[in-house]
Length: 93
Image 1 (cartoon, rainbow, N blue to C red):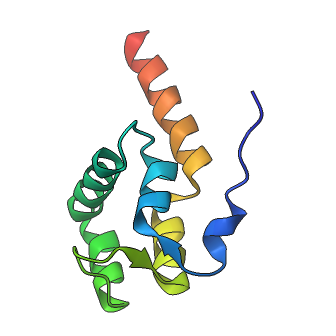
Image 2: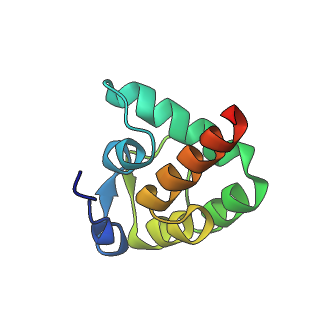
């Protein structure tokens, strides 16, 4: 399976739904957005850094600076998915 390139996250503004789908792929955008927002609030350092660059829980578009904060804290979506898969596999074994 070909890995997706997520370099697009580092340039320009992006819809929160697109960023959320990259980190939390779900059939419905609303589910991805809800999961993403919940995860952001569960990480105090990430949430504080996002608030400092004018993030709110009502935003529908993310600025390049907000995207950079997200990538700095979470890594790129493919890294997050690999890490999650590795932890899941270790938990099963």
